[in-house]
Image (cartoon, rainbow, N blue to C red; front, side, top):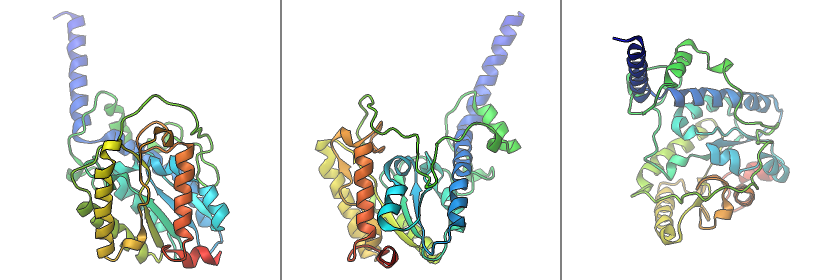
Length: 306
């Protein structure tokens, strides 16, 4: 066999092996998770050093990173506020919450927004998979050759020393380099799932219960989503069912799901769940309004005191 053919077959074999490796364990997801959680560690460290009796944390994926201003919430409530959102955290939300909970203390307010609530079919890792390789971490995650290097990082624990941080954050954890006014090409609307209420209520109540066990006040905030006009009614029906189920379970006051669905692309940056400057201002105002509402606000005793 000619040397060139052997090299070709070797390269093809490596590529197929990499596809198999990348398809049964999501090395890239784990790598992003570790980088993201390292990134917010400095913000959590600053929050831990504050002497304030209460703090506000913004917890979630890219919609939180792009869509809520911690600086503006602090300015208007007087409570130190920190954006600890991580891009793509919907894929590893359980481990992400597990990393945050040790930093939560009595009197804190935790605003949580998990994109899985509106997209229950989104792929996600089983708990613990960002820290160790186990059978429940395996699945069908198609990938190609770069996963070999990611696997090496995972095994050797080198993720902390490779690559820059992904977001330029200020002292509040907000993205200082964000330019949400820049224009982007058109993007798709989000399609409504068959049903969201049953699974969401379980996930949401678990988060509320866990945060309350830490003597914190939770607020579950559904972020703005770009939908088509013809599907807006279907979406609103889904959210109505979710709000009703949460209320019947006794958790309705912890849910902020007002004016979630938007049909104007100007409210969005580059996808159906990434708010633009307009969307960011509107969602921030909604969160502040609920936190300071003397009737509906679940944490009013905290925000009113300041």
